[in-house]
Length: 456
Image (cartoon, rainbow, N blue to C red; front, side, top):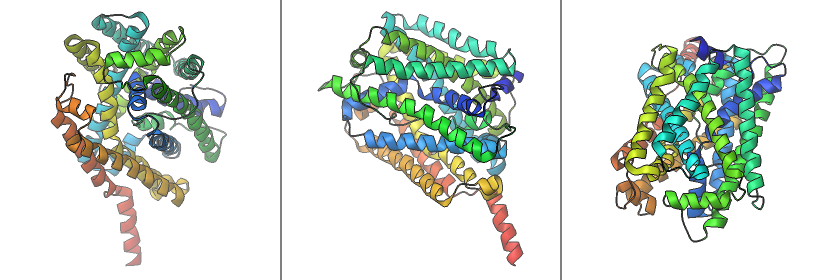
């Protein structure tokens, strides 16, 4: 496991300056938000709903910033990752369910990474052979993380940090140059928060010569810096879709491709897009390896060799992507890219509860536990994710829109995820979130018992 352990260090390796050390892990996690599925969600949201979702998008982006910042604080104070703490604070059955959710989120990240690069190749080179591109993509984005795991910790960390920063800068500047007439700011409808455990894992080592308060501020600055860029670009995608789509909605791959070509007006922009997808694919692949190791060891209690984390999720994602590409072609890949963020969104309410519980625990965080005002913000963020999922379930069950009819199989578009599976996952996620909301941590129960014994 030395390869995984070397990647667990801050992405800056042994960088001399604390702000660079804190920016490295933030950049790594932010790469998980730069997948093609979220871009398509932003484009389709803009083409369908116009600017009606801007406020909701802004609130979700702020919630993502809050969760990533709290995760970094947890890692700094406890010197543990979220999976380790959940293993200590929850029963084994709860840990297994959390592990299944996290594993499903990692798989969807692999799906969107591979399928997104395939669609990117189609946009740039107009390639009509998706299976060949899938095989090429799987080899390229998965070979580099394995090679880096053989290097020493400092070199691998520095390379990952620079690659992440280069990708984010290219992503932001490339779209701004390509579409200069568009105003500023937001994120996609359902940002993925599955990176909190990997983030807290990467920042858990002790930084010498700096107070915890200084480190908290450095991490807050890093999170705001990285997520502001993502926030800006996704708003540009969304607003560009509003401007370009007019009365045409992106309801299939050809419509989305036409909109993306209109958004990327510069001839260099598609090539920059492909470079961004390849670099972000490498980072996503590496963080998925870290996350897979953490999930199997801390949530399932199973220690697996390194090659299993490299091969199993990626082979499964590769086979699934090839199947969809072979059966329904690029239209199937487009639908896969749209479905994966929806699955991640359905798992969101229960995934944020451990972050909020742990950060507000006096026994775990001590004097660094969050204040009452931040607790209120956490509660509001949880309600936002919960009620959004409830509205989604109601729309799936009783709605009659185009995308619900697609999901139910009432149109000619391919069905990638059976309707009953979507209903069961969404309802199960809501039920599990409500169960976690009323389930205290073991340390909180022990603290209450000690207080009662003292008073009695």
